[in-house]
Image (tube, rainbow over all chains, first blue to last red; front, side, top):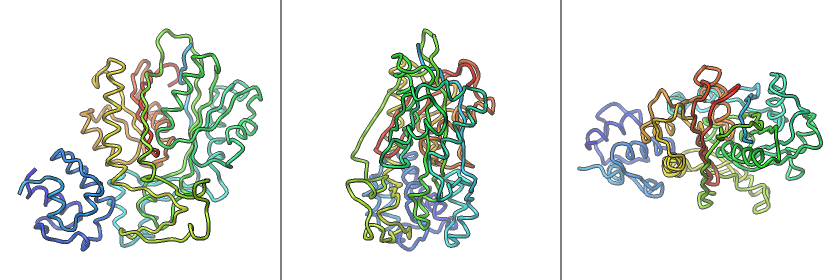
Length: 75
Length: 341
């Protein structure tokens, strides 16, 4: 999955209009970034990139770029 | 002699909490979206005075009323619950009396969550094949709702209360109809799905009842059930595919040999992910939780009963059952459909 496709999936996950996210956005600004969204993101990373993300690692993410990094999404 | 699964009945409490009810309580939260992810539209919740044993009695009475057997025929009662009536006596003993089961019957509780049904079938096969029981009543019953904080959205959307009653009888067959069994345990995961207080380790106090809000806006106290969704997801992702592979290897079968897969009905997104990961065809993967939610050890028997009622099982069908839950604890087995089921 490309970076663009991943960003688009995170847009959808956070119920944002397509093309909203670019990467530097802070996760704390999104009300829907909660434990349910975390699980959805972990499933996305596992399915598309084979990346098994440790919950602690996910909890330390502050921005959307951090999410893409732990999901091993190519830049 | 081997155990044959003869019949299943279940009981859901009358009180229903729908996703729209939850929407009213959490207007700033996309509960409808969550419902789409969890696959749960409503869950049944026990009344304050209604215990797990009351639900189990209702399920067992339904089984007796169906004509599958009579109370006086039962010679062993197994009750899987994490919400017993008392620390002691054993709830299964009280149920023997309430159900009119002979005093010559054995009865015991075992404390497991969503892996409990598979373990219960394993115990049943052991008791029956060793000649210790011939008509066994396996009960699963939970009222997790009593552990949930009404302001904890992360668990209120998922869990529902229920009980199921399964009749297993001794049958003279050459090949077992249940098994082989594989099990797994990892206590390191205990803190990720837990009711921290109320036992000997940490008794309930005024202090433990103090509520706090977490970073996601969910409110709970140490007296309530806590679930770390991301940790549970990772556990599931490790335990379930490994269990499926181990069971297939132990039985010398492949995914293609299985007619129906019935996993613990945790939630829709976890099940979808597991199905895709294991490359199981959608038509062979049974999901049934829309109107009952995650009822812990009762999800598998409820789904089996539903699959049978929908005509998804035929004589000789090979069904794979996989349970996984708090502990961490997990198990998997095969069930060969025969007789009534």
